[in-house]
Image: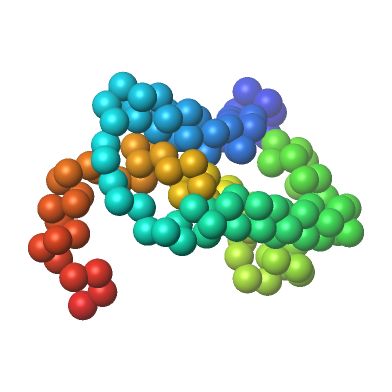
Length: 130
């Protein structure tokens, strides 16, 4: 598979949550939404922003132990099923998602998380679980 036919086109996966945060921050500056954040949300956000990097480090070490590249555009040499790959086929993307959610909570980026008043009305009408 040559470089022109490689379906893995996005060269920097961490750019996805970064773009989401920047977009959420910008929209929040233009059209602010008031939301009463739970007191613990910011602390949880910082935890989710920092702690998941240990999963990414574990996945990187596991890749290196199996002599396969960490770079998602690199030439894969083997299917890795050890380490965090026992639990997820994409632990690094799980890390990115947790970090994204953590950033939303830590920096209170409401536009990156909810749909404003429409979502608030829905939350008041419909129970969370059942």
